[in-house]
Length: 509
Image 1 (cartoon, rainbow, N blue to C red):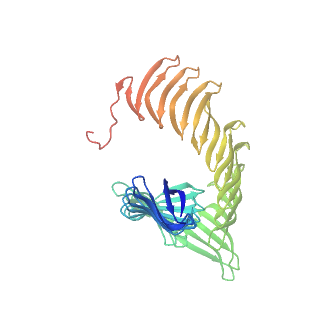
Image 2 (image 1 turned 90 degrees about the horizontal axis):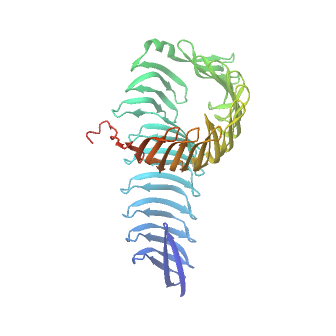
Image 3 (image 1 turned 30 degrees about the vertical axis):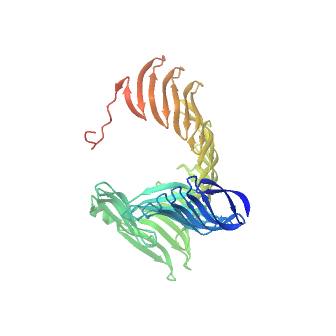
């Protein structure tokens, strides 16, 4: 037997226990109210084997195994009412496999995959009715790749594109209004994920072009609608026909789709006499959009050029497995370089520079894995600095300056949000504005000034909302208007009570 002092941390709560116990035995620790806080076996003074922890009410809080004091088995965590909240497998104290979370009734809320304590693979989140709500891809703990959002009835309602931990693009589709009428763009997909058909609805009626594709992504049919009816006149021009030409040896020389009027539409492939792909072009209404090479699965590969609708070269660079890779240049219609930089696996990487049509620098930025990272400078056509600051991992960070219209703005950012004191000045250095921000929200007293230095407006913010009196002054410094706010809502103007805003459908309230 030996005397010892043990401190145990369970789910964020610290417990102390004094006891006389052998080095290998079952032990219990207690809450101040006498209820057991945790229990398990100690080996040489370290937790080993199956352990449980409890709320002060006696309800089970967590349970799972330990090996060498490290979490090492399936662990389950419970809410104060005893309902299972989450479960996850641990290996040497690191999460491994699916983490499942549940609501108080046992309905699955989410399932996230972990590898060596980092989220990896497709995470799935669910509606209260059990239907899939969202799929979000993860790579090394950060959101990366294409995701999908679903309505409670299973419809895909948004296509999501993530990059380096941020939602880069969200395309809303397959939406219905409050009356249940289809509105806006709709898409349906083949089982392999490629688009089956797409088009636009207005008040539940098809409007404009509808396109249908085969499972390989080749355009099968184009139909134009007007108020839900096929536009017969336009349809004559839109009917698509796949045409092939052949080499003398019988091998396909070219493959592409044409409208009935003879216009080229979509991807055209050219083949060498031995059957290998020798080139590719993309058309829209007989207009060349881009040209280059594709690989055996149809993905863009190697050097490509893109063109404006008027025929001038728009951009040139290379693709690798369907993603931009290596140096790319973009051009003004005049042929002068508009911007240039490098891609890595489809994401901007390194320094990018933008130019005015006359050749002068417009903007310079640095990127890392598709996100701004490093110094950023923007110039006017005369070479004067308009904006200057620094990004870290896609967020503005530290001091920034702007030249905006008739004034200059100076202040700092923290994690992409305005933070601390910001000052605006007129071109002659006279104060224009002074105020403080916290996490991007205005906070405390804010003051604006006339060009002659007299106070123009002052008021106070709390948590980003106007609070109390905001007093407006004329250029002579005399108050001319006072508006009283409460939580951002106008309550009185020069002492006169402001009627509450009209809410449609709000009845008499």
